[in-house]
Length: 434
Ligand code: KE4
Image: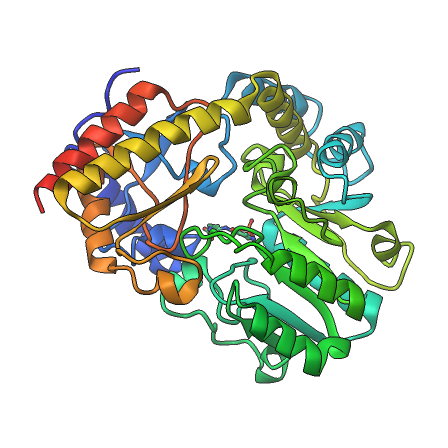
């Protein structure tokens, strides 16, 4: 593919955005798309294929957002498009069990041994919200624990010190969440074993669940210190607290079996989304059968969805997972990531700009700080003005990074060494101008 085009005027996107502002709050259907963290107005995408997204203005950008994770094969992969076309021709929704649900469930369970039974739903939010309700129903307890900076979608109980767009917009505690409900959510600093042990010492037997991203990617990207997850697993087991791993973003991305395979931890419930729908609306939650059996119609915890197990999303997910395995995608993603590591480190060093570069598999984050980042407090030290300058500089070079310091970037198997070379050369030019 040719090198990304130098963005021309944004007239077409501006015209679309001007009208969108009259239709949608902030002109968007999801807040992080509004570019509020980096300034300026968003471009409009009209098509995407492989590692590229094409804007309404005729620009072609190298895309490191990948629709926030689902596009692990790149955009419009032929096998995914064909699978969706064929499924659509057979009917877009049945509202009745269909074989594709079973086929995708087989693939999820083959890669996630901790998932004994599961249920499909329509978003990561729904998966996490349902997992919390299930844990409360299973334990008969109300308290939950989440970690600052982690984002689990926009269910009321989880919009407390949340990451992603909530953090980006400075509204980590959303308005509209009843104080009585928010009080049931205890928030801890990630990687802080002492705070965890202290909370369990005082409240362990009141807790229904702990939910966390095993490798948090909604305040940039940071990783668990050795022993942290092991302590959490042990405390949950000892106190009968449901350990919920939110792998909506990391599932099937960081390894075939997600972050839990990489880290060797076995949660009680895992939440999934994004990649398992190949870009179509999907979510899933699953784990220990003794917990999942409390779900209706077997048990007293209600959860439902008109489009859950939708044949198009199932077909796209099956095609995505099969192709990812066929091309040994995770090895390729690691090769690409290693190239990016070296190039970004060189670019920052040559320009003398402090960047703490963190990458795990095909996810990465460039924090504009010279401190290491192990938790939200560290992440908040990063220089957001510098990030915004870098973001727009790269966009001007035809490279689209996530429009917030508190989001991760994503590689796909469609990215090429040429794409990375163009990206690194662009970073050198952008940083050299500082
Ligand atoms: P959705 O409801 O957006 O499908 O998933 C919510 C969710 C749950 N858990 C994790 C770990 C997540 O990262 C997400 C959503 N991810 C963000 C990007 N960081 C979605 C982008 C957006 O909100 O527009």
